[in-house]
Length: 241
Image (tube, rainbow, N blue to C red; front, side, top):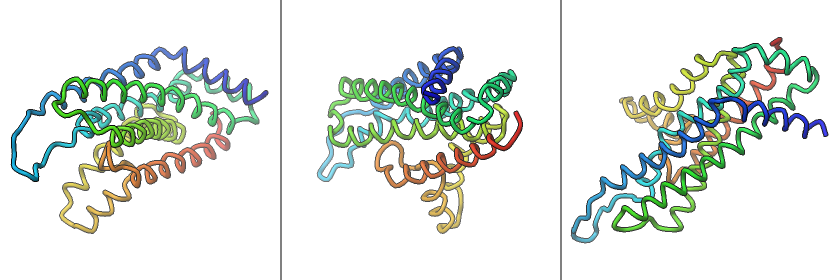
């Protein structure tokens, strides 16, 4: 019963936060628009075998690369807004012994909403690609990439929640999160050392092969998101609001 009340409370807070619905809608629109633009850039070519045809699945879901940033902001604001307004004190006063439960329920409601928005984004992107591309994306590859892309968005949202819980500052968490999402992969391309380039590409927090062939990278991203959420939960439980 306590868990149900906590889930209801976190759902109420999340759905009444105006930015939630704008960010979720932007995730769907941005992912589909960028995927459609990328698919439209493909021209039919006649080339001898073997022909290096573009990866149509990857093109269709290329919008995931940018919509990650929106999901990061969504996760950050879900608790950062409470710290900014001071309403986190009311939450902790109402449930002084249930801080882990508060964070877990917040993560659960965030994950559910992000997964729904991610599914709509992927379906819209792949549907538009089938209308635009001369050769529709392979169904099996599309299903694998769709599942992986949705998981990426969910995990990045949890990463934003974790950083905001640790830092208790929305702007700082967003800045650090964007650095993790985009600066670290860029550094991996600029490094002259093959050893360090390999390490960053394989052990960095974000898969560098989005949105296909990313399952090993998803494990690393999940480890970062869950690990930081556990650390944030410990800090959330021990610190004052």
